[in-house]
Image (cartoon, rainbow, N blue to C red):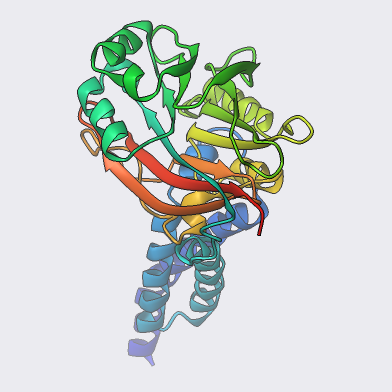
Length: 329
């Protein structure tokens, strides 16, 4: 009897430890499922949901080996919730061709001018890019891009460049009109470029927004990030189809990005089953890589041929996708 009592006493700390781990995963799963992340540090933590989902699966196994059945049940539910949230972005559901004109769209964060401009131009040329949404674009970067031949490939530009990380631009092979900005009072530039696409069935009215929201790295930035993400839900003008392309500083595990999708968009990478391909960070790799750069399209558009490419000098990867507009069928 004394030996049994001693064994129970020795097992109690392990039971408590496993229970605390199970409770932590359960809280995280509830926050993710219910979209409860608000403020710092919950917003940046939610970016790592795919890693937490994998850890939760391992924790289920550990709880089973340790025969902590209550914790096992809690962990099984949490793991199911998290895996169910993550897995769909690895399943293809896209319509790849909607029968209309095709646009090769690229988004890239130039890291305040740190990226190699010759590699940007080479990538635009090799990928036959029609529209480039550029973030952290300074006037000096634009001058260097012009000198490297970008204007020969994409001669039209909506220029909202600025110092440091504040500016963004849209470059295109088709004529562009500056249609304003979705920028909030404390945010980065997010220019709206209107382009008329020949032969599109609805008249060719398309807008491309170069998206750059503030990184939610401290309480003040989180408030700005939430405001800028909310601005992205604003509907385009009647009869216009909009593409949002850029550095959202958000993953599909953030409720704010899911609200943007609910406003009338598809994430191109997720639609192609590539929604877990990481885009940041590249330089240094001090943090686990996550997917914060996106191309979001109108649901009536098709997407195909996604590429995620490193460019020297930036901590972001470029995202390139072929977007087809609705056409007569």
